[in-house]
Structures are given as C-alpha cells and as structure tokens.
Length: 223
Ligand code: MLT
Image 1 (cartoon, rainbow, N blue to C red):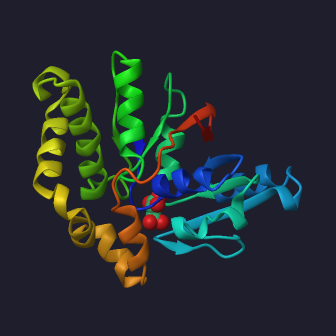
Image 2 (image 1 turned 90 degrees about the vertical axis):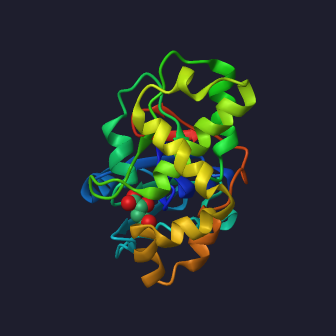
C-alpha cells in the first residue's frame, strides 16, 4: 500500500473518484512525455510537480483539488511527482499494489480485512528518502482501523516496530490531523506555496470510498 498523503496518493484517489480512466505514474518526465504522446490529446492529461510546484508544459500540478470531473473524466492521467510516483515505480513488481491516503483510509482497511493477505507493507513515500509524519500517521490510521474493526491486538498484526510507532502517532493526533499536517516538513513547504486548501482536504479521514489498484506496472485504476 503506497502512501503519499501530501499529495500524490490523495491526488490519485481523487482523480479516479472524478472518473479518470487510469493514472499512469512516472518518476521520469521524459518517459512520461514519450508514453503519453501515444494517446490522442483529448484523451490524455499530464500532471507534474517537483518540490510541490507545477512543472512547465504540464496541464496540471499535483493539487488534488485540480483533478475535477471536468478535467479528468474518461481521460488517461499521466502523473509525475517528487516522491509518490517514484515510490509507486519502486514497488511496481509487488504481488499487488494499492494506493492509500487519509481520504480513503477505510477503503484500504476494509479491503485488507476482507482479503486477509499474509503480509502487507504500508510504504510511506516520505520526502527524498526521509521519514514523513503525514505518511506515518496514515499507516497508523489504516492499522488502527484494522485493529478496532477486527478486535485484534496490535501486537498480533504488527510486523515491525515502525507500525507500532505509527499507530501511537495516529492515536495521539487522530482528532488533529490537519494540525499535524501543518507542522510536518512537507506541510510547511506546501503552506509556503499557499496550498492551505490542499492540506485541509488531504487531512480529511474516510472521505472517499475508492481504492486504487495497480492493473499493470505503473498503471492504476479504481478497484
Ligand atoms: C510527492 O510526490 O512528493 C508529493 O506528492 C509532492 C507534492 O506535494 O506535490
């Protein structure tokens, strides 16, 4: 389960909810252009960001609020971001790849409760290889939903100490997720770019009942 609360995984969930046909993720801008050129212009839309800022020559940046029905319905979305899409590329050979955010936390938890996979990795995208608060709290929120809804002890499902710490973080901040996002380092970066509305949206819990899954390497669709 790839998590990039600020903002790639929130954007992917939102775009699919708005009716995008599929999201094609790329770490590399040139590869994105080469692949997206094969689709007729009216059928495609390109989204790109580095350091939180929209890339030139792209239709959209990475604000989930820009991925509206008018922009993306029935279109192929080609997306490149600083960390989230690179993280998705890094795990694209896993047996199953899903996308999690705070806004679809319950959809992720329900799927895992229902399918009971033997092993699950909750993969925080972080920031350029470093830890991030927002992805960790989301991993904790997913695990907490599983623990409470299956009445299981955390110690019986946690595969490592990181997950126990993630659940503790969530329990501490669950009533103040927006406040936590605002003090996170990437939250601070986005606030400097005037993305207050994005933070408020990304902090909402269980807003969207949709689970993106990888259909083929690098291509995500609604489950
Ligand atoms: C990322 O992939 O690092 C993020 O989504 C950056 C952003 O907020 O646009």
